[in-house]
Length: 147
Image (cartoon, rainbow, N blue to C red; front, side):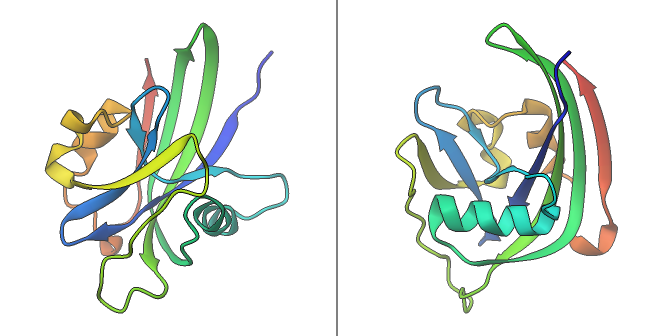
């Protein structure tokens, strides 16, 4: 029997554009972040992943979305629970941070929120969530998807 993967991801928005991570081998884009390690709080995992992958120091804000997905990827059944937090660049000072990947298999780019579907954003259903009002004052949403 497999295990449930717990992932922490961040929504970093600047001038209406969303920072996305691109898998260079497969082409799809997703929110920056990564796996939560045993004994590591989700917000600490997110800050660590941002530093490791981009060098950016972020401030993790409120929980925006809990995304549960059950799917098959390259013939392997997966079950993930993803915690999505609002984040801010700690040293931003009102300017969009430049983002350079520290991992050769990843790229980072700014994508207008309304163009996520055309940018190969996954999961596709999450792209439509960005069209809704999901500000920090709203509280967290929960989606559970079987694909």
